Length: 344
Image (cartoon, rainbow, N blue to C red; front, side, top):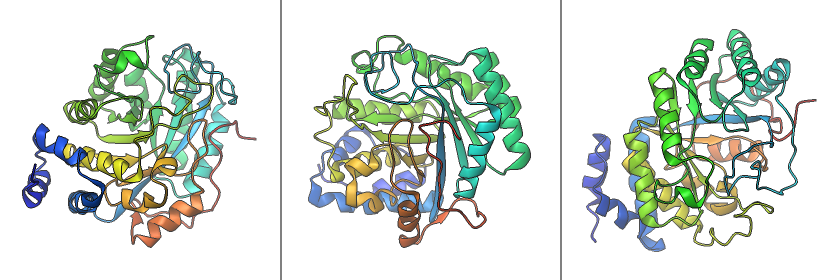
């Protein structure tokens, strides 16, 4: 299929997604034509976000101990991965980590807890931590606590939480192959509840779990339909001790393939924050800078239980591209606290 590049870009600038057959053709471009796709996606990214990059820092505020059976996750009940396991951090510990994140240059601080959904103590801790952070620091707060009800979502909003993360992860048709303890519909419902409460919706995907191109297209259009404000695009990190830990499902995740995936999410969701998330270091490798021509956001430092690229390398990449953080920050430190263990 011949791609009408100028029309593709013109439509995206008007927030019109490509027809499914066009998006499919983009996914199937050969490597030697992918740079043209990245250039087209850059025109869209530049129109909506200029040369700005949103910098996010994760905190794993409660690790492991999860009753769910998500096949990709080192914190699930199926996992035998040797990860840190600990109960909810205190308000003071969370506040200390928020200070470190801000000093490192973050605009958004993401508080994540393992589990199906928040218990009362966990919710109260995040509510109080958010109030304390907001009183002291100009940070956006994103909470990620699993399945929510309307009351919990309202309380988060009232405390000052800006966004709620709950990834769709994969397509509806593929979901039962990666999790049996909750459904795709459960995830969609939580996103809807967060949106109704007035929270920004941060909801994305994990690529490399055995999905087809049709599943990827389903994800891209489903996120548009869900009204996603922010879309983290994760590339599976196979973790030994998890059902997907042997890496059989990630062999197709070449650097050029990852750029095609990011570009399709950009064209289907032109106005959304597209985040190059976990696994970018492993799968994009030396082509990581090209990902920021398409995506306008990244995580700085470590992920939930896996190490990320050094913060200094990410800042160097941003600066070498001529990009700037979304929000001007004070002189930053070079240290980002590990997200995988409690603060000292």
